[in-house]
Length: 237
Ligand code: NDP
Image (cartoon, rainbow, N blue to C red):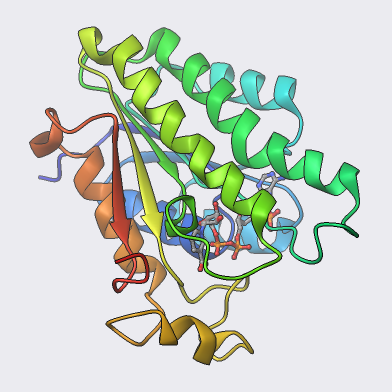
Protein backbone atom coordinates (compact mmCIF):
# COMPACT_ATOMS: atom_id res chain seq x y z
CA UNK A 1 0.00 0.00 0.00
CA UNK A 2 1.24 3.51 -0.81
CA UNK A 3 2.65 5.65 1.96
CA UNK A 4 0.07 8.27 0.97
CA UNK A 5 -2.99 6.05 1.36
CA UNK A 6 -5.62 8.18 3.17
CA UNK A 7 -3.09 10.95 3.85
CA UNK A 8 -4.39 14.49 3.72
CA UNK A 9 -2.70 16.57 1.02
CA UNK A 10 -3.32 20.19 0.02
CA UNK A 11 -1.84 21.55 -3.21
CA UNK A 12 -2.05 25.31 -3.63
CA UNK A 13 -2.33 25.98 -7.36
CA UNK A 14 -3.27 22.55 -8.68
CA UNK A 15 -5.51 23.08 -11.70
CA UNK A 16 -2.87 22.98 -14.44
CA UNK A 17 0.76 22.20 -15.23
CA UNK A 18 3.09 21.02 -12.49
CA UNK A 19 0.40 21.41 -9.82
CA UNK A 20 -2.01 19.18 -11.73
CA UNK A 21 0.68 16.50 -12.08
CA UNK A 22 1.23 16.67 -8.31
CA UNK A 23 -2.51 16.32 -7.69
CA UNK A 24 -2.64 13.30 -10.02
CA UNK A 25 0.35 11.67 -8.35
CA UNK A 26 -0.99 11.90 -4.79
CA UNK A 27 -4.53 10.98 -5.85
CA UNK A 28 -3.24 7.91 -7.72
CA UNK A 29 -1.52 6.85 -4.49
CA UNK A 30 -4.72 7.01 -2.49
CA UNK A 31 -4.33 10.36 -0.74
CA UNK A 32 -7.23 12.66 0.06
CA UNK A 33 -6.25 15.62 -2.13
CA UNK A 34 -7.62 19.14 -2.03
CA UNK A 35 -6.25 21.69 -4.46
CA UNK A 36 -6.79 25.37 -5.10
CA UNK A 37 -7.10 27.28 -8.32
CA UNK A 38 -7.79 30.83 -9.32
CA UNK A 39 -8.48 31.52 -12.99
CA UNK A 40 -9.14 28.06 -14.48
CA UNK A 41 -12.39 26.67 -13.05
CA UNK A 42 -13.06 24.36 -16.00
CA UNK A 43 -9.62 22.73 -15.77
CA UNK A 44 -10.00 22.48 -11.99
CA UNK A 45 -13.41 20.82 -12.14
CA UNK A 46 -12.24 18.36 -14.80
CA UNK A 47 -9.17 17.38 -12.80
CA UNK A 48 -11.17 17.05 -9.58
CA UNK A 49 -13.63 14.71 -11.29
CA UNK A 50 -10.83 12.66 -12.89
CA UNK A 51 -8.90 12.23 -9.66
CA UNK A 52 -11.69 12.26 -7.07
CA UNK A 53 -10.02 15.23 -5.45
CA UNK A 54 -11.56 18.45 -4.20
CA UNK A 55 -11.06 21.76 -6.00
CA UNK A 56 -11.55 25.09 -4.25
CA UNK A 57 -11.21 28.55 -5.72
CA UNK A 58 -8.71 30.49 -3.62
CA UNK A 59 -6.61 33.31 -5.01
CA UNK A 60 -3.08 32.96 -3.67
CA UNK A 61 -2.74 36.75 -3.86
CA UNK A 62 -5.31 36.97 -1.04
CA UNK A 63 -3.38 36.23 2.14
CA UNK A 64 -6.39 35.82 4.40
CA UNK A 65 -8.13 33.53 1.93
CA UNK A 66 -5.03 31.34 1.70
CA UNK A 67 -4.72 31.12 5.48
CA UNK A 68 -8.43 30.30 5.81
CA UNK A 69 -8.19 27.60 3.15
CA UNK A 70 -5.24 25.94 4.85
CA UNK A 71 -7.05 26.11 8.19
CA UNK A 72 -10.28 24.73 6.71
CA UNK A 73 -8.45 21.83 5.09
CA UNK A 74 -7.92 20.32 8.53
CA UNK A 75 -4.68 18.81 9.79
CA UNK A 76 -2.52 18.22 6.71
CA UNK A 77 0.04 15.48 6.29
CA UNK A 78 1.44 17.23 3.22
CA UNK A 79 1.27 20.83 2.02
CA UNK A 80 2.55 21.60 -1.47
CA UNK A 81 2.72 25.27 -2.47
CA UNK A 82 2.91 25.28 -6.24
CA UNK A 83 0.99 28.39 -7.35
CA UNK A 84 3.38 30.84 -8.92
CA UNK A 85 3.33 33.53 -11.58
CA UNK A 86 5.86 35.37 -13.70
CA UNK A 87 5.89 39.04 -14.66
CA UNK A 88 8.50 39.48 -17.34
CA UNK A 89 9.84 42.47 -19.25
CA UNK A 90 11.85 45.65 -18.93
CA UNK A 91 12.24 46.33 -15.20
CA UNK A 92 11.99 50.05 -15.89
CA UNK A 93 8.59 49.66 -17.52
CA UNK A 94 6.82 46.95 -15.50
CA UNK A 95 3.71 47.88 -13.50
CA UNK A 96 4.65 47.98 -9.79
CA UNK A 97 1.21 46.62 -8.84
CA UNK A 98 1.82 43.56 -10.99
CA UNK A 99 5.18 43.07 -9.32
CA UNK A 100 3.65 43.34 -5.85
CA UNK A 101 0.97 40.83 -6.81
CA UNK A 102 3.75 38.46 -7.91
CA UNK A 103 5.37 38.77 -4.50
CA UNK A 104 2.03 38.07 -2.80
CA UNK A 105 1.52 34.87 -4.78
CA UNK A 106 5.12 33.65 -5.01
CA UNK A 107 6.43 34.66 -1.57
CA UNK A 108 3.76 35.81 0.89
CA UNK A 109 1.38 32.90 0.22
CA UNK A 110 4.06 30.20 0.63
CA UNK A 111 5.11 31.72 3.95
CA UNK A 112 1.64 32.16 5.43
CA UNK A 113 0.36 28.82 4.11
CA UNK A 114 3.37 26.97 5.54
CA UNK A 115 3.02 28.56 8.95
CA UNK A 116 -0.72 27.95 9.07
CA UNK A 117 -0.29 24.32 7.99
CA UNK A 118 2.34 23.73 10.64
CA UNK A 119 -0.04 24.72 13.43
CA UNK A 120 -1.83 21.38 13.20
CA UNK A 121 0.50 19.25 11.11
CA UNK A 122 1.34 15.95 12.80
CA UNK A 123 4.81 14.59 13.47
CA UNK A 124 6.31 13.60 10.12
CA UNK A 125 4.45 16.30 8.22
CA UNK A 126 5.84 17.61 4.97
CA UNK A 127 5.91 21.14 3.55
CA UNK A 128 7.12 21.39 -0.04
CA UNK A 129 7.31 24.63 -1.99
CA UNK A 130 7.86 24.84 -5.74
CA UNK A 131 10.67 27.32 -6.36
CA UNK A 132 12.75 27.52 -9.52
CA UNK A 133 16.33 27.07 -10.66
CA UNK A 134 16.02 30.82 -11.30
CA UNK A 135 16.40 31.15 -7.53
CA UNK A 136 20.01 30.10 -8.15
CA UNK A 137 20.70 31.26 -11.67
CA UNK A 138 19.10 34.04 -13.70
CA UNK A 139 20.87 34.10 -17.07
CA UNK A 140 18.49 36.40 -18.99
CA UNK A 141 17.21 39.95 -18.45
CA UNK A 142 13.62 40.86 -17.64
CA UNK A 143 12.98 38.31 -14.92
CA UNK A 144 14.44 39.91 -11.79
CA UNK A 145 11.22 39.97 -9.75
CA UNK A 146 10.53 36.33 -10.54
CA UNK A 147 14.10 35.33 -9.65
CA UNK A 148 13.93 37.35 -6.43
CA UNK A 149 10.70 35.60 -5.45
CA UNK A 150 12.20 32.17 -6.02
CA UNK A 151 15.42 33.01 -4.14
CA UNK A 152 13.25 34.15 -1.23
CA UNK A 153 11.83 30.64 -0.93
CA UNK A 154 15.30 29.37 -0.11
CA UNK A 155 15.31 31.52 3.03
CA UNK A 156 11.81 30.37 3.84
CA UNK A 157 12.83 26.71 3.75
CA UNK A 158 16.02 27.24 5.73
CA UNK A 159 14.23 29.21 8.42
CA UNK A 160 11.04 27.20 8.77
CA UNK A 161 13.05 23.96 8.79
CA UNK A 162 14.55 25.27 12.04
CA UNK A 163 11.17 26.27 13.43
CA UNK A 164 9.40 22.98 12.72
CA UNK A 165 12.25 20.45 12.70
CA UNK A 166 11.86 19.68 16.42
CA UNK A 167 8.35 18.41 15.57
CA UNK A 168 9.61 16.16 12.77
CA UNK A 169 8.14 18.40 10.07
CA UNK A 170 10.35 18.91 7.04
CA UNK A 171 10.39 21.99 4.79
CA UNK A 172 11.93 21.75 1.33
CA UNK A 173 12.00 23.59 -1.98
CA UNK A 174 11.82 21.85 -5.36
CA UNK A 175 13.56 23.95 -8.02
CA UNK A 176 12.54 23.00 -11.55
CA UNK A 177 14.26 24.13 -14.69
CA UNK A 178 12.20 24.50 -17.89
CA UNK A 179 9.12 22.28 -17.59
CA UNK A 180 6.58 21.79 -20.37
CA UNK A 181 3.45 23.63 -19.16
CA UNK A 182 1.19 26.43 -20.37
CA UNK A 183 3.63 28.84 -18.69
CA UNK A 184 6.65 27.48 -20.55
CA UNK A 185 5.67 25.29 -23.51
CA UNK A 186 8.29 22.88 -24.84
CA UNK A 187 7.72 24.27 -28.35
CA UNK A 188 7.61 27.93 -27.24
CA UNK A 189 9.77 30.78 -28.51
CA UNK A 190 12.21 30.45 -25.58
CA UNK A 191 12.97 26.81 -26.36
CA UNK A 192 16.34 27.15 -28.09
CA UNK A 193 17.63 29.79 -25.68
CA UNK A 194 16.69 27.67 -22.64
CA UNK A 195 18.02 24.42 -24.04
CA UNK A 196 21.30 26.19 -24.78
CA UNK A 197 21.88 26.49 -21.03
CA UNK A 198 21.19 22.81 -20.37
CA UNK A 199 23.06 19.50 -20.45
CA UNK A 200 19.86 17.57 -21.17
CA UNK A 201 18.41 19.64 -23.96
CA UNK A 202 14.71 19.23 -23.48
CA UNK A 203 11.95 20.55 -21.29
CA UNK A 204 11.19 18.41 -18.28
CA UNK A 205 7.76 16.91 -17.82
CA UNK A 206 5.43 17.94 -14.97
CA UNK A 207 5.33 14.28 -13.89
CA UNK A 208 9.10 14.33 -13.32
CA UNK A 209 8.65 17.21 -10.86
CA UNK A 210 5.71 15.44 -9.23
CA UNK A 211 7.93 12.39 -8.68
CA UNK A 212 10.46 14.50 -6.78
CA UNK A 213 7.67 16.04 -4.71
CA UNK A 214 6.36 12.56 -3.88
CA UNK A 215 9.82 11.45 -2.80
CA UNK A 216 10.16 14.47 -0.51
CA UNK A 217 6.68 13.82 0.89
CA UNK A 218 7.37 10.16 1.55
CA UNK A 219 8.65 8.21 4.53
CA UNK A 220 12.29 7.94 3.37
CA UNK A 221 13.08 11.65 3.62
CA UNK A 222 12.54 12.47 7.27
CA UNK A 223 16.15 13.67 7.51
CA UNK A 224 15.90 15.92 4.43
CA UNK A 225 14.94 19.46 5.37
CA UNK A 226 15.82 23.09 4.82
CA UNK A 227 17.15 22.12 1.41
CA UNK A 228 16.75 22.99 -2.27
CA UNK A 229 16.18 20.13 -4.72
CA UNK A 230 16.94 21.11 -8.27
CA UNK A 231 15.48 19.24 -11.25
CA UNK A 232 16.63 21.14 -14.30
CA UNK A 233 18.66 19.16 -16.85
CA UNK A 234 21.70 21.05 -15.47
CA UNK A 235 20.31 24.48 -16.41
CA UNK A 236 21.87 25.82 -13.23
CA UNK A 237 25.05 23.76 -13.26
P1 NDP B 1 1.15 27.19 -15.02
O1 NDP B 1 0.95 28.62 -15.32
O2 NDP B 1 1.08 26.18 -16.11
O3 NDP B 1 0.13 26.76 -13.83
C1 NDP B 1 0.09 27.53 -12.69
C2 NDP B 1 -0.84 26.92 -11.68
O4 NDP B 1 -0.85 27.77 -10.53
C3 NDP B 1 -2.25 26.82 -12.20
O5 NDP B 1 -2.90 25.70 -11.65
C4 NDP B 1 -2.87 28.11 -11.68
O6 NDP B 1 -4.25 28.01 -11.45
C5 NDP B 1 -2.16 28.26 -10.33
N1 NDP B 1 -2.16 29.65 -9.92
C6 NDP B 1 -1.55 30.70 -10.53
N2 NDP B 1 -1.84 31.84 -9.88
C7 NDP B 1 -2.67 31.50 -8.88
C8 NDP B 1 -3.32 32.24 -7.87
N3 NDP B 1 -3.22 33.56 -7.78
N4 NDP B 1 -4.09 31.56 -6.98
C9 NDP B 1 -4.24 30.22 -7.05
N5 NDP B 1 -3.64 29.47 -7.99
C10 NDP B 1 -2.87 30.11 -8.89
O7 NDP B 1 2.56 27.11 -14.28
P2 NDP B 1 3.60 25.92 -14.09
O8 NDP B 1 2.89 24.65 -13.85
O9 NDP B 1 4.59 26.00 -15.17
O10 NDP B 1 4.34 26.40 -12.75
C11 NDP B 1 4.01 25.91 -11.48
C12 NDP B 1 5.07 26.35 -10.50
O11 NDP B 1 6.33 25.89 -10.94
C13 NDP B 1 5.20 27.86 -10.36
O12 NDP B 1 5.49 28.18 -9.01
C14 NDP B 1 6.36 28.18 -11.26
O13 NDP B 1 7.01 29.37 -10.87
C15 NDP B 1 7.22 26.97 -11.04
N6 NDP B 1 8.19 26.72 -12.10
C16 NDP B 1 7.78 26.44 -13.38
C17 NDP B 1 8.73 26.22 -14.36
C18 NDP B 1 8.37 25.91 -15.78
O14 NDP B 1 9.26 25.94 -16.63
N7 NDP B 1 7.13 25.59 -16.10
C19 NDP B 1 10.16 26.28 -14.07
C20 NDP B 1 10.46 26.58 -12.70
C21 NDP B 1 9.51 26.79 -11.77
P3 NDP B 1 -5.34 28.86 -12.29
O15 NDP B 1 -5.02 28.73 -13.72
O16 NDP B 1 -6.63 28.21 -11.87
O17 NDP B 1 -5.24 30.25 -11.79
